[in-house]
Figure 1 (cartoon, rainbow, N blue to C red):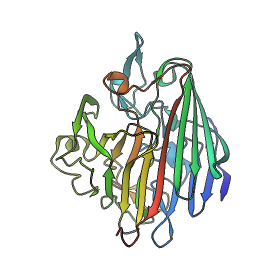
Figure 2 (cartoon, rainbow, N blue to C red; figure 1 turned 90 degrees about the vertical axis):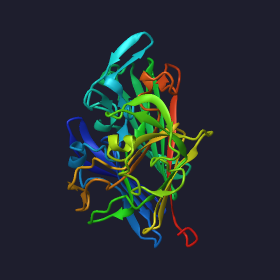
Figure 3 (cartoon, rainbow, N blue to C red; figure 1 turned 135 degrees about the horizontal axis):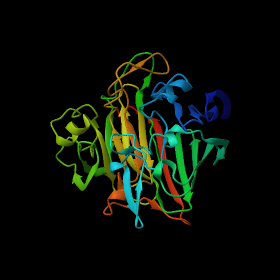
Length: 355
């Protein structure tokens, strides 16, 4: 149990460190470039340790990455329509990186930056604290902002605690963009379509052809977007439904059932390995993405080749495009206020009764 640091390469912004956290049978690797979780190893039902996230073999892969593998996303996760919002009587124009829109904080968002790191412990578990200063005007956002992200690895999983403060009103919605495949990533290609998913969510945001919310919140009951009961990810991924056709699969924001504090919003099971992932968060919803646009033949970290549906994302964060929808819960943080969010990925294995 503990934390080990390695030199991992160089960028124009400076040297990149890689930290390996170990707790019980769990092992996580986190880089200071983009705050990327480069590896997360979890035992299967036989006790064999296996890789459960998609990633690259070296820093070069992450510097060229277009999939946001494992990185920290901000200032605002997901899309902001027309890369523009209005706040307190002023219009703000943001840097674009998704057609006419901004995605995941812009072309130089937090995923594309060098963070400062301090290893430590929380509640007796190894942790890594990452710091970033986002200056006024960064990617078009107002106000200077200080961001602190704590990764903590316990014997049951990975916890991520987000905190931020600002000297001017600004939107903030942070997340991590890990792609999971609980089958265990090896030298062969395995898709995620056989995983069984259950979401504690009865509604999704309606979106247009650019996956920009219309403002309407739709019930999932009776549609192929309904995961209120456990269902294979691949069972209806190509169903004839407008929202699925627009996204070419699942890429939708699910509104979580209301709860206090850290609440369970998702359960994923991979029947062959027996691995089970439970997602807990304080966020009001999550983006479920089935890896529809992973480039075919993309080289992974261990010689495997990725492609469509190789991994899935569960990204808890605030409502998509909230600054342009006053009817959505606000993501605006003002001076003197503290932004805080927490997400936990808890792992276990199926027992005989569960199988």
